[in-house]
Image (cartoon, rainbow, N blue to C red; front, top):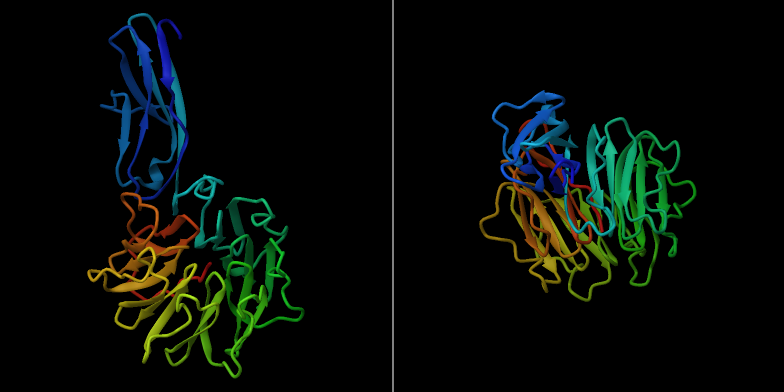
Length: 368
């Protein structure tokens, strides 16, 4: 206590996404009355005289140092905290810090979610990682640059460089980070539970890592592939003709395509289920439905991108909002202008634009 004022709940630093709703709040014990006055970067905020300061549709210009002075008839104390505004929204399980977005994270191009870790690809071609690092999955190799795509598996990470080569780090118990010698001309990557998949510019695939369920056994003659996705123990490939082929574990029908499935524009996988984004902005899902992973709400349409977590799927809608089905953490309020999404085991990620994005199909980075 200072002159009769005991601060029982101090301010805490916050890192929030642009457009978010959040609150700075203090609590204190004192002989009443207590007066409050808020400041922003040292300047008094007119009318901000309550114990809480509420933000709606938070903008980058509102990032900075906030302080509140509590006073009574005897004296006053001041408490301060910082608010950082970033382009990445992360929510859900934070048991390993996987939703603790770095406060200085800027210029993000894409995000990827692993089991308990998160990757962000920056526009300058570098990768930032945070969360669980028990097997080095967030130890981005020193000097890694010119990265154009990243993927997060169960406990490993992959990065695709602009020259078509790969870098891999993290758990290597099944050889999932042993990038095949001489592998070049890669244009896309996917990371599964303990396996990795690369798409080459000529439309062929290369797989390595765990092969318990044949997920490394690429179907003979498979060619003209334009996108890949990795599930728990299986892989999907999207053909240039809009058809999908799957292989590996199939105990829930996750690699059994619906008859006549065509006009697919993008694919994604969860633990034991698969989802395709169709021309016209609708989706189709197949495989395990224990948690409603394939129960796509009838109200969802005009979708631009899809990305699956362990037991559910996120989808960007044409208005920049995010739809979801299956088991996923509850989305934060104010999430709009979304241009990228990703899912982890029990955490989700979204990349938020400075302004509404043009309506176009975005092929989401595949993940676990």
